[in-house]
Image (cartoon, rainbow, N blue to C red):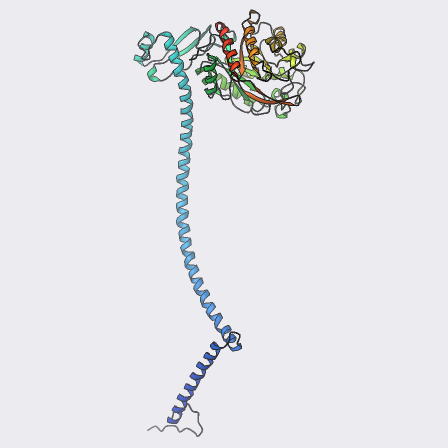
Length: 514
């Protein structure tokens, strides 16, 4: 047997024994009650109680730490989810970029095709109209059964060049031209154009019109035509040295039955009319070859288009308001002719002169200063008969009017015509840019006198005129004027023009409207 160990007297109350067990239970109960009481006192005490504060400071970090751990776990979950969505969206974005690139390529191709189709449609509309006019005048029917040549071409599907001699609708007559005759079923023909020789020395004269949008839009041109009863046979428009050759301008003009009459300026197209200092366009730069690449490209495009046009290069050179005038923009005497020679030679080298009527066109001399108004001064600008086909001039009835103004053809044109005939004898003359202002109330009188003198035998060398059908506000001698040059600026103006153009119809042979 094992004898239990005896407890020495005075041992602890928690040791084994009945008495001590009761004491242990009592002690535990006291401790629990004391803790509960302390807890109640802490939490029921005011918030600024020191004990409560100490307890709170101990408990709060533990609680905050747990919240932070929970938040961290939530954020990690959200981060994983976001990364997954980003990856999905990146893949979708890459797919969309690929689709967009493909769509952009298709769009660019379609735009190119649309532009070509619109240009072809515009050209074709004029060609169809011209073809119908030719067929109507020759008595041919739309089915091609009237003429044996047309019907044979239609039945065989072949295209046979046909050479015609005589007058082209809406253009001067007397030239021999070669034009393809195509069966209607295969599409419209290329507009018939006169030979260059017949344009240079025409047997009928030109009524030209400058409008805001021609030859790219004919609305204003047609409106004026309907009011005066005849259609122009020359279309005036402008280009600068900042744009390439516009074959569509030439093609649309001929499709309309009008000679393209281009004013080509050695400056940007939208440059102000009185901006005579433009160093980038000094004559020396053109002479020196700075623009040779541009000029060569332009000349080649003219030759490739194979349709004639008139080019009025750097008009009003004897005045001082453009950068190509001598004694302006750093230019010196003789450089205008050198520039003209240079441009003309590049055209000759590239075959473009086979399609160009070169027009030398100074400004009206009597409204310039005493030096510039002299014939010797003007003669200095003339390139010579081998490089000029027509001579012309700009002449307007415009304020401020002098005390000697007679509102007549004689006052506006005669002094300049006298100098032109002396400088360039035997060259056809075109009044290349003219108009009359309503200011002063004498426009109708001036128009009537214009046509009276155009019909006079003494002016038989004047082969036509170009009317500037615009309204322009400009400053002269410090005073601002708004000049309405339009033919239809007033009822009296329209009446005078309609009556006047009718008096010269036998020389101009214009197509009636109506």
